[in-house]
Amino acid sequence: MKKKFYIIPFILLGLTLATGFTLANTGELKGEISGLYTSFSANFSYSSGTGVVRSGKMHYQYPGNLHIQFNDGRIIASNGTFLWIYSPSNRVCAKQTLAGSGSVSGGLVGFLNRYEVTRTQNRFVFRNPDANIEEVVVDIHQDTKMIKNLRFKTDNNVFTYSFSNINVGAGAKASLFNYKPPTDAQLVENPLNRYSR
Image 1 (cartoon, rainbow, N blue to C red):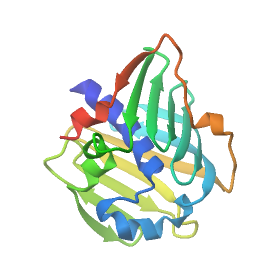
Image 2: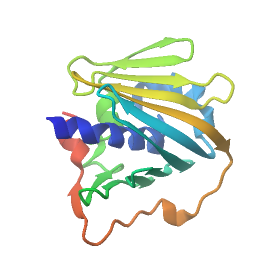
Image 3: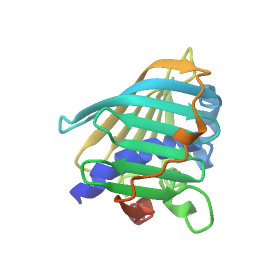
Image 4: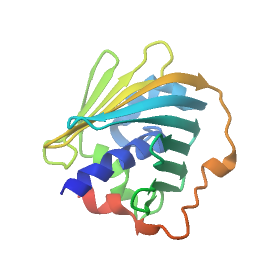
């Protein structure tokens, strides 16, 4: 169980930004994060309730190109069709399909379709007490219309992402988004499908 909650927050961050919250019951949220419908770069920090802290740099191009590099070498990348999460410490690369009939239930749709959403000013809260991820909280920056914070809550931990130094309109090379893991990496296909049920 511990490994599941270790990898899911990283996959959820990639799915959240790679899909731009364009799915299912997120219509109102989509209107509030208009900044995602462009390209940008940003610094981010990640923390968990157990005290784990990480940071890094990300590049994003609408509608689904994403590259995130953590300071410890982890990489999350997406070209809109696939999402890769690579960990250099154990040489494992998770590859999640984002489109296609065989994978729809395992992506962001599989999470947020089953959640009740409430809104308080610039905060959206998605709750489902029966899911592995019980709560997803999205804070929106009022002026820039960008995501300021993302929080994922499980039954035993809370994972938070915060974004800063956002540069809207920043370009990036296409090779960043078509990630190729090292040839000796162990590839794990569609891990989120198993954990979204």
